[in-house]
Structure formats: C-alpha cells, structure tokens
Length: 66
Image (cartoon, rainbow, N blue to C red; front, side):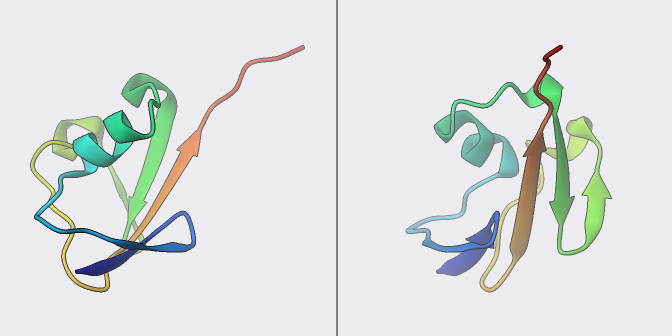
C-alpha cells in the first residue's frame, strides 16, 4: 500500500497507525502537529487512525531553540 508521509511516498506492508509511524521515526508525539488528508488531528486520534492507500500525512515537530 502506498501513502505519502511528509511529501515522500512510502510503502506500507500492513495497516499502520499514525502513532506507529511517529514511533518509527523516533519523534515525541507530544511535540508534533499531524495533518491527515488535510485535516489536523488531535493526539487522541493517533492510535485509532490507520493509513490507507493514497493517504497523505504531514508530521511537523516543534524544535526549541534560542
């Protein structure tokens, strides 16, 4: 199954939740905003939303600095 994550086409061999994709990328889920097919998701939905064929996911991580 093909989907787009941060503009890159990825192949997924099984249903994958947004939480699993965030974990694989070693990103802190408390420090991100996720857009799924053009809709901003709350963190509560990260476990329940599963990517499907041709879905688009954007993960934006906050980085501190000064």
